[in-house]
Length: 386
Length: 79
Image (cartoon, rainbow over all chains, first blue to last red; front, side, top):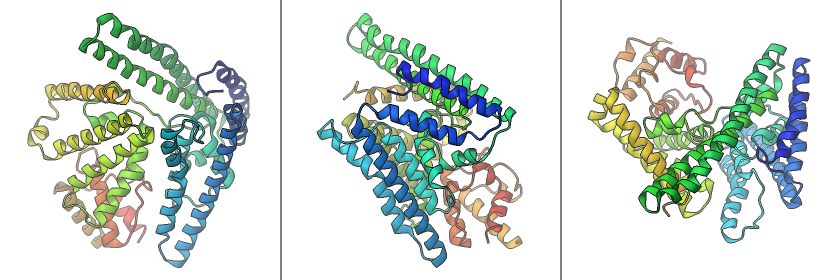
């Protein structure tokens, strides 16, 4: 059963949310219930392919083992005043190994072992390992960790949740009014997401298939196809994300917002603050910032601007590779890395920019250029170029 | 205490290149575009070098270190 696609999923959500609503009204803690519901839903997600189920369960066990090792490593490091640095890197490498193996493996055989959701769960578990290393996570129980990894609304697609807010939510009992506020907000997001996915994305898909044929081959057809495809990507993915957020809220869990009007972005940095926000902030916090702190601390670059540009490239190439190790995705990542680096250079070094950045005409031109760059990026992503 | 404050003000001025923060320690460094995320990381690295206080990149919310006075408070409570 595919989440957010098959009618069965939506039908099952009705009793799941109804029971959550009753528990919420009675001011009972919801998180054990959410865990149980997640276990059932994940079983239904995988039951058609037993191998994937076995692999997913094994992966959870492996992740718990790495988490325990990270915890004891961090505690030892604090007690003995020696850095436990290396072991964290080894644990992170082990944690991403199944995903890397899968991404490489599917290039050779489509049957390579993997399971739906392996990409997203890797982000969540790596966040936990790194924050254990930083001493920010110290008392999350194994049950809480499993509940976080398996929380079904965000299991197969975004938004990427963070463990600390999730665990805080799990430990806090909501008042009736507090739960109602989340429930109403969640219901609104869910309906909006369903409209995005089943009306917006369907219309965009129709445009993407039929308009190019109507306007003819060549440049106009290509442009119409790319525009339709870009709108489809947005409505489909923002639709999923909004439904996941809505479902999470109705189960009493705050799920971060993943899209914030990306098509009004006035530069490419602004775009990534609005598009797949949970992915870009994850990369910012766990790749860009860590890489920068490492590089600045060791003075690897002469200037901060150079360091930032290299950091942006690293971030976005990783983002592309995470989507898949195909030329289209890798070029897409590289392309956005270059765009961010150029944008950063412009903002830091170009006097004309500093002088005019608040002018109305400059903002309009900047928006138009940004949108052209964004849609060309969609063309790369969708294989319209290579 | 006063000494720590001065050292931190010097660091922020040095990293941002803006002198006004020395006088106005409660202005929002991110909203006024005195610091960007890159400069904030550089500040964390510098704080670690100077005071031996290490603050992880995801430890503090931006709202917890968006003015000079808040940064001084965060460092002081860890010394």
